[in-house]
Length: 80
Image (cartoon, rainbow, N blue to C red; front, side, top):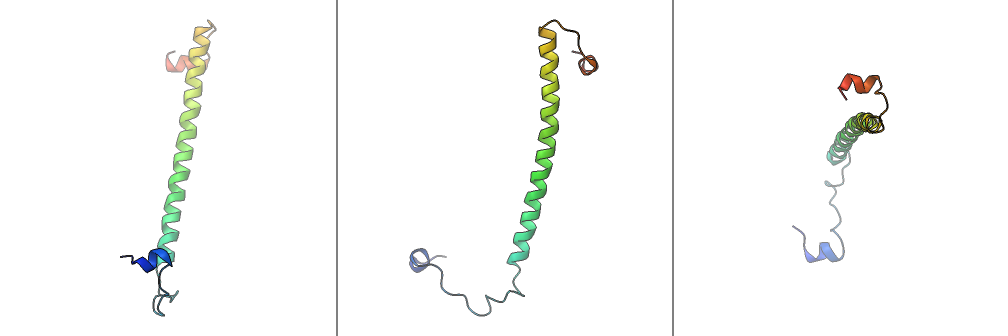
């Protein structure tokens, strides 16, 4: 729980046992969360890129059909 002093001036100085970096696990948890977040970002980027490419091909099929042009191999495979 925060006190008025914590909110106005800042938290009180850490005690010696709180500042022991070798026994602290907060850094390891932060690194793990960072790795998980980066993995999620990579998976989202890859999947959205692939989805975007498919959507672009689908729109191109519709555009070709509306202009009266022959469908390419992708459009024929999709049934457009």
